[in-house]
Length: 185
Image (tube, rainbow, N blue to C red; front, side):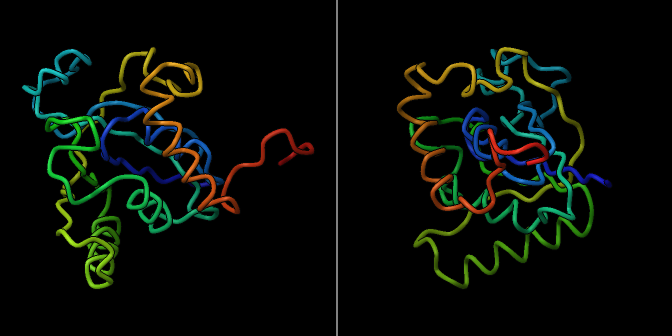
């Protein structure tokens, strides 16, 4: 199996991680920081909005099971790519919408998907998602990893993450990993 990597920013990484962890073909999802100028930032530094980093998820995936295009289509359905530096109640450059591409093919696919969404008039406002070359990824602190899975009753998780995950699961039911099924599923 030859894995590829996607690095995406679309608001709080807890939301993105919870969604992408459920998809067939996704090997893992790691919450972290990318796109800024401060090496090895902490969560507190990123929240101070002075590092230039966005909250991101890094997703190793099997392109034989799920394509980069498919990942981007999910990405654009689980966040609002038309709000600059904001997702719902979260505001600041760390919550911006961004695609950090790892290859010329990923860049071309990202631009093509965004063009298609714009031409289809999916949103009345223009897409403000940045498309930038990937440079470096810093994993977030351990307590951020699998946050929603480990903290489903935390108020932010109940009010913000859970509704996003429920909407995603309903829309992408056929693409979800099978949990609790027969061996090998």
